[in-house]
Length: 218
Image 1 (cartoon, one colour):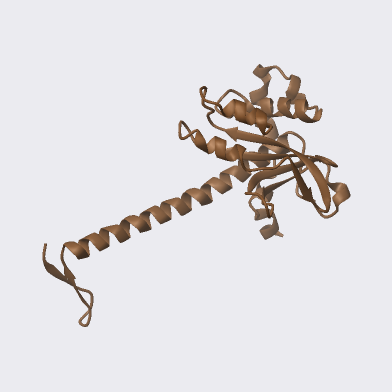
Image 2: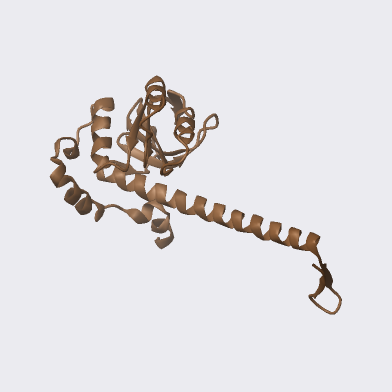
């Protein structure tokens, strides 16, 4: 391989195998960077829309953390403690009781990703100057049938929910009922009615708030 690439009268590049190697490596690295960046951006947006919609349908309010005494039935999205990794959503159910949500779309991928999520968080956290006892919910599109993931979740303790099963939001409502004593119409609803109920409730969800469009409109 030999030649010359002239970019301008003053700039020429010798084309040889070393040049081709540098060029293809640069193009490949740039492609991976762009794909990774796009995947992260789209993934974060999707997480906010899914979890924001889920918690809104379950009757909780987005934001409104101005005063600690109002932290009841309120959730926030994408929060991070100084000593912890980021959680995709945190629900402040009642004073002293909270639930953090971590969501992962891994398909039939590496089950170690779920194990990593289970190792991220502590049982207690401080927020707005108060101590909260926190349950952990990990939502994954698929949970491996084999392995020790369920046993690890029990040790955390944490709740694993598989999103590929039918009407998984109902399972979230039921698990919240078990963990917190929370009651919602979905908990006891016949599965045949769940799909239409979720579709109807989605029309009421303030999606623009989850991605910041409400603030821009104001």
